[in-house]
Length: 165
Image (tube, rainbow, N blue to C red; front, side, top):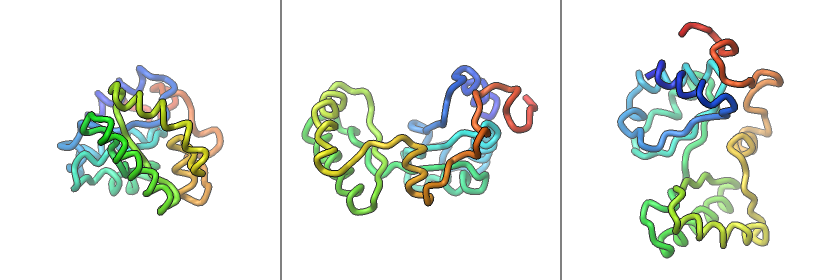
């Protein structure tokens, strides 16, 4: 797992973080998630847990490895109808207003892309802003930076913490 992840990360030199989406089996297992988080810590990268399974241990393991992490609040489009995406988008906005922030995850399905193209421009009128993962993490963590100044570098074997392959 670690070697595959390392090779994948090295193929994308300006990667900022990773997200699981079809990793339900992996995210419920402590040992494999430890391998993942150890790799993310080395570079350093953040982790977004899609929570594709209720008993995910990803956040717990990320915290143990000091990997910045966020967890999905709402899936926008696991049913691909405009009505469902609308319902989920409204739920996402409600959660953001109640909690100050919310993480929504969607796919590049036509219904989702079309819906978001129409409705994202309306968010400003509602006092809602789109944020990057690092910006959202900072809002939830007292405006701290995810990584120390100068710590974040392109992902290569030469700059990773602990250079063993």
